[in-house]
Image 1 (tube, rainbow, N blue to C red):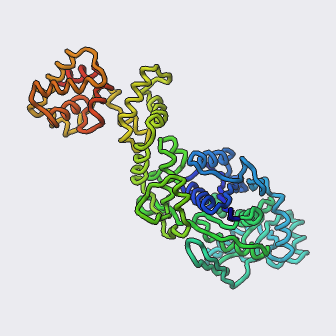
Image 2 (image 1 turned 30 degrees about the horizontal axis):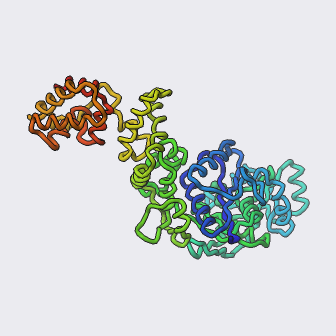
Length: 483
Ligand code: GLU
């Protein structure tokens, strides 16, 4: 076992986003591979954005994906508590330390004053940045502000004219000039630390030595490094994962509808967690060989942070659908049946309580489409022809039915069905053979014509099974109507 400790630190503002899931997955893979520990901690100090169910949503999503953690709110651990609002006491001594050493100071500027300062800077064409107005207040000035009823925030005193550099595991050397960074708030007037401060204290107290997170945090990193240095504690290693772009190669926004964004939605639509994990592992990570299909265990064995790219990853829904279909095809049919039945019920295609006979019919129906499903919810549109009185015909289908052979084949088939009485699942084959014998038509002219007449579609799943599931009555009714 190594002493590697990585963490996923979501703000529990809602459901588990696919970007967060990727960060958590990479954390998990690195930790498992190296025999380290994976910690989940919740950054819930921003009360306005915090949703109480957010914590459960995050953990449920990760559990569904099969990602396991070693320490968090649910199972505890030696470095808890694992949510920031329960850690406020722990932060105080560090605030005092920074105030005493002069690395931090109290700022009494009001929101209105800061707003005015920003507006003036913008009017001069400058990038807005705190002016440092409260940097050198005397004890008397502070006293006067307090007497006015002002409540201070605490700002970090950013050292001037320095370069903060670090070696990112993914981006290599990264440098920032401190001249572009204004003194930033580390504790708000209500006493609650801001993200940049709390994250440093938590990572330090929880002995995190590798911070894996999204590229959007890259500009926070120099601020955090300055805090580590001011506290005189060790700076962890960083690995900033590239952005995830949508199919148009634009930065994915949470409102982007070309992409399914939340893990819970994948679950609802009947994506398999193994497929989702496999797919998100490839958002930035390039395996060594040609192979792209990996189980979670295989990912643990193969994954390597050194093969994670710093260029943006493109989220390709078609590829995900292809991959999910691959996993559905390989899955135990009983599992797909279990996932599919609720979709058919919700769509009103099946009653909420199934008789044994209805269940067995539904099982056959779902198996019929297992090969074709990109995600399980697709069972509803795909199997529509089994539930509608009226079927609609594709253009090609209409053309085929207009051909000379069609009425010959179909009336022969209707006769066969009428004469047959009860037809067993396998019995349809024999009827089609009899039609072939009687009419002389075979192959496409026989099978496709029958399929088209009964389904409206040129292509579809196994014909015998389709006929069996439609049942003798429906088959006869549709043929009669057509003829
Ligand atoms: N709470 C931050 C987020 O959700 C975590 C950033 C970090 O990992 O440091 O983006």
